[in-house]
Length: 259
Length: 288
Image (tube, rainbow over all chains, first blue to last red; front, side):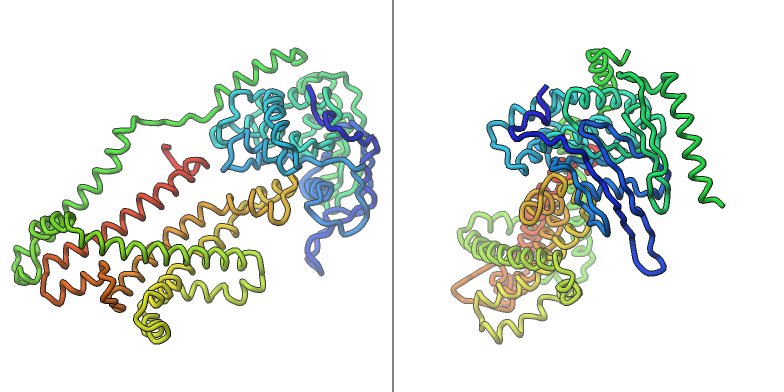
């Protein structure tokens, strides 16, 4: 399947560099430091899961990488990658059909009309939504909408995919299937993925590396390489064992705030 | 096992089939009937009350005639060229006035929704204008524009534009931020963000504003036609006033029914249809 690699330009293989990034909300006494001098390097084609309790600034970090928020301090270098994003809500445009949502992503990137039609159908097939292109978002289930949102993010030829708790609102079974789906798509592409979640098992199920962030302010407190063979299962013993280790570390971090 | 991609596809298909929302679409005849019969009932009740009031002898019938002669007068009026000339003069004014109000309202709405300064400066003035009875503008309009078409148009625009502007402003204000962020990540900035994200997202509220604007425009127009008589332009308002002068109560009530019916027809057929369509497309309508 042709994915981000289909673009004609030479693909960047430089790492994604996040250096000394700080972000504070509000000012004066009510100021909240969401991120404090956070530094992280993400390799090309890596699948990194950012894990943390509430208030660790994981979503903030994604929004900074995507350029939606402005940096207070530090620097982010995406290595020249085009950035796509999938949110917790599907965030599809309700006035467009699924196919047109995907098409708009390509149009906004300036893709010519002749190439868009074929690619649109390819992408619908990739996320197993063939035959649903003419539906409106509200006519699809939550899982299908999220797959459509993924297709839309891929449609912009993104090389760096930012996912902000994309499966958080889905039922367990749909979520498991979407894990399989995402793993399959990532394996067959050159995508670099930064995936935010507060679900430890999900992080271990998906990531090459799990990065644990502290809360208020967000900093990297621990990193875990996940050497479990793919394709993985969320209910496998290896995933459960590693998740237990990470959960302990996460609890320790959360307890710190109760004192 | 999950390793098998065709198995995954089957899993997804199964989940999709179970989860996909279902929409009941009853048959068309039934739907139309269920929309129409309450209106027929309401009309029947109004006519009955009207008839009872006439029977009570509250006013002599040459002042307040019963429904039957009024309806038959309306029927015969519909066959005269004079009637259609009046309707066409009035509707031309309505279209021109409402069109201008829409343009002005859109321009002001777009500007105010984008600028915090402008909003602080004139945001409340727009709402204030909306609550000002348009008939209060006529003495001024007549002073400035004399008894002319321009005076009527001026008041229609002042009456309708604030509602239209407010509709657009409210629409832009209430766009879910997630859609704006999604648009930004997709590369929609500046004008293309307006075209592809902001305007379509604000459309439902904007159409509500247009609908409200139409009601204001129609009211202003009727007031205007009663105050600004132009002899060469025998409009609906002109005929209303004529009927009063001739003490033609039957003709007057028949003409009033026309005013009411045109207002309702445009409101429900034009704006109602557009509104319903938008809401259905976006899944905002219950029972499709």
